Amino acid sequence: MRLYAAFVYLFLYIPIAVIAIFSFNAGRNASDFVGFSVKWYGKALDNPFIMDALKTSLTVALLSALFASVFGAMAAVALQGIRGPVRTAFDALINVAVMIPGIVIGIATLIGLVTIFEQLNPLIDAIWPFASDAPRLQMGKASLVAAHTMFLMALCIIIVRARLAGMDRSLTEASSDLYATPFGTFVQVTLPLIFPAILAGFLLSFTFSFDDFIIAFFVAGSETTLPIYVFSSIRRGVTPEINAIGTMVLGASLFILLIAQTLLRPRKGK
Amino acid sequence: MTQRTRNFLLLAPAGAWFLLMLVVPLSVVLVFSFGERGAAGGYVPAFTLEQYANLPARWAAFRNTLFLAPVGTLSALLIAYPLAYFLAVRVSAKWKMLLLVLVIVPFWTSILIRSYAWIFLLGGKGIPALIEFIGFPAIRLINTPFSVLVGIVYGYLPLMVFPIFVSLDRLDKRLLEASSDLGAKPWPTFLQITLPLSIPGIATGCMLVFILLMGEYLIPAILGGGKVFFVGNALVDLFLQSRNWAFGSAVAVTLIVVMLATVTVYMRFMARLSANRDDVSLI
Image (cartoon, rainbow over the protein chains, first blue to last red):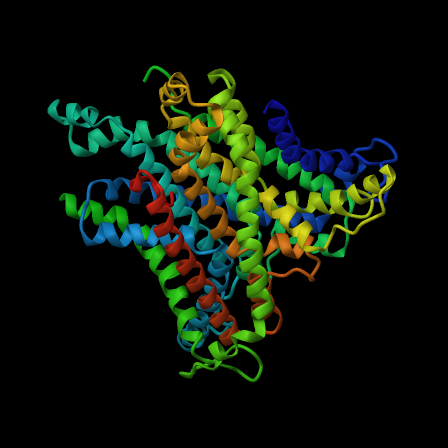
């Protein structure tokens, strides 16, 4: 049994180790290890296409995670206290958002937004008061943030709600018995208790958005995110440069995940 | 501010976002699936079932998906179950969390880069070279259904282990002691107590993996080399290459309908199997 478990762990981690090892390969050929070198890291960090893609990915991930965790937490707090059709509708929307395959979210956002933009752009042209060309609505960073936020908001609502459900009700009751206003109770009792969940939601959302390929593939317009860059490079062949980027991305996500994991773990003695 | 206004304000951003970015786009897909293709791609309004009648043109993609998604789910289950059992029943409390986290963490890292790693391992200079070195004839692994299956199991194993672990961990270990005290051998104890009580975990794990596999694009694109393609690959082709939005929408709607139908039938079946109906849930 132990041996079996050891095999599964090897199966899970050997591919990651292989990428990490080959990222330090001095040779040009990706599959023969000739010597140790960090030159591909330097090459990757000097490549303007990679740096641009990285900047786009970071911006999109940061904004999506921020919107998703804040709006998601707000909705989770409100949903905790209500019943009836509004609650049912939100439950259904959350389920649909997490169940629909990412590729369908990408497609739907693409054709949905393009159709809306085709209607709105002539309208903007018509009412634009200045001599210069009117701004055009098109797919890009904003549409990508909007699509990621929609999906990740559902995830954040689920995470924060789980925390709220596990919360001791007597704490908020005690607070209002002691004449705290509902807002005071929220700020001094509820918020500190759910804050770790909100932060964990933020971090998970950030890594998800940063790593997402399929939604971005449809929705990013002419923008290139890091996963889109990596995917198109893989199509052209395996290079040590991609191994270096892969190792850095995996390392960064592992780091963020460890933080999120610590935040979500129930504390002992509470 | 009344409680009603407060709740309205708290829900307004999320509600508006879901409406604009989920309800409207999905409705557009549904409407487009009954439309016609424009001369230069895109969409022309119409009401026709032509796109749905044309679905057999993409039959191969549906066939591959409906074959490899269940096979991949089952393979992941067979590999994940012993590991989940080991973690939940055999490992001491001290190591349990750490070992579990080590299983889960890869799932949250880039599936793109993790699938890409298998190009190395399954490619000409990886495992096939090793097999040849040992003395067996060289075989081709990359760009076959097998390589896609390996990628699937590798990618989604963590998602299968976790729910099974949770259901086995929650299981009252005194039941196992009682069973062996009453003279049952390990296998009958497993088949009559452990396995039935872990069905909710199996059901959740299989459903999560199956749903994600139905919409898979990356793994077949990277490890299938255009020879093994899923519905997801057909959708990318229809929307991004041939710009046939109407037909693409019909394929997308069909994918969701097939997925929902399979999941509904499956959940009914699992609920009947399970000792505790309430435990079968999505999340």
